[in-house]
Length: 75
Image (cartoon, rainbow, N blue to C red; front, top):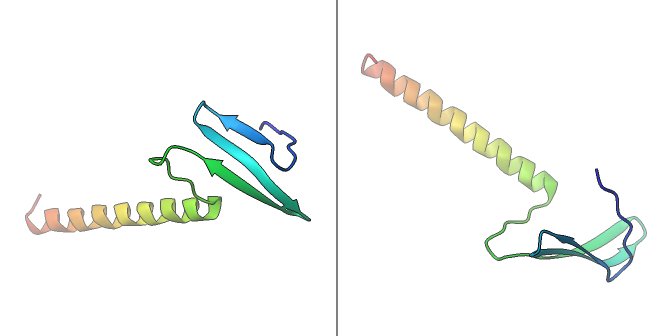
């Protein structure tokens, strides 16, 4: 893990097209701003994990449905 120290209004660049800027620091909360290409999705970690879990659940249900359908046709 890379650990960097930044102050308000300082940035970190990811690749050449993604900037993460520290907007403010209040107590234990940090406000970050992200400048990235429009086609790039940016999620909070807990939201990203929920999306992954929902996708996995949907894929598992699709496989179960396909197995049941194949069983109906003796395959």
